[in-house]
Image (cartoon, helix red, strand yellow):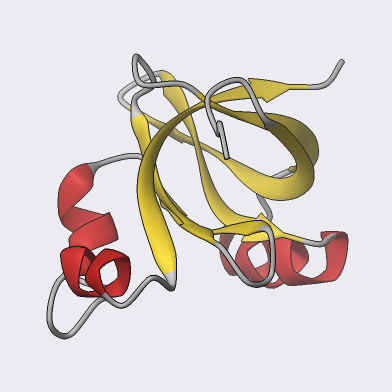
Length: 105
């Protein structure tokens, strides 16, 4: 199955660091809101598109047909997996992908 170009609509918390916007806590609106409660950051709707040129890292969950563990850098992504994300690929459960996140206006 070709994953490049697939887009998933979801909710996330919009955060700022050093005047740059990034997104954290992807999922449904309720889940994203849990992250927003920390610092009252806005919850926004986004399109997450699988793209090898993207800057976000994620795991495409094959059986569920969803993106999971979406993070703005490789380190945060990798620490989610006890034996590394490659283990999920080897077991046929997921695929490591890079993504582009675009806020819906």
